[in-house]
Image (cartoon, rainbow, N blue to C red; front, side, top):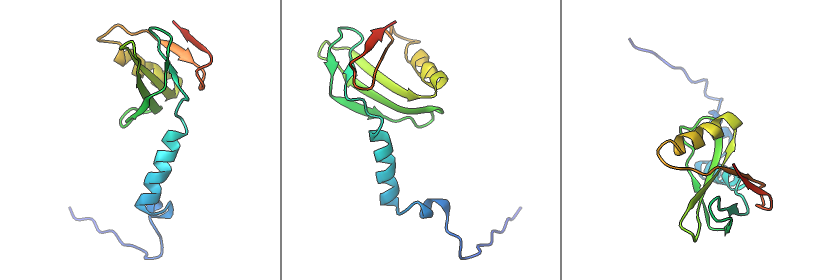
Amino acid sequence: MLAAFVSSGGNMGQAKQRGTIEQRIAQAQAKIEATRPEKLVCNGCGADVTTIHPVSTRGLTGVESIWLGQCDCGQTTFAASGKPEAVQAFFDALGSDTELTLGSQSRDGSQHETS
């Protein structure tokens, strides 16, 4: 089967309307950076974890951002934001093969509790 597509010439694609590839990359990076917590609080020892790295959320529908930090005590701490059921599914999958201590905290890390 052969399909033909006709361009009307004057209409720009949706991506092009949002800017150049460089502008779209910068917009995506700024959107992710806006979700960066000031710090993470280690669920193991309670220490502040300030070296935090973004993790790709590609393929994780409903998860807007994931951040990862390594505490000096050796424990890895994750933070995720997005739809509550998607975030819970992420942590459920993460903890399926390992012991996982879940916690919640405010964005600035001043309020923290483990479950």
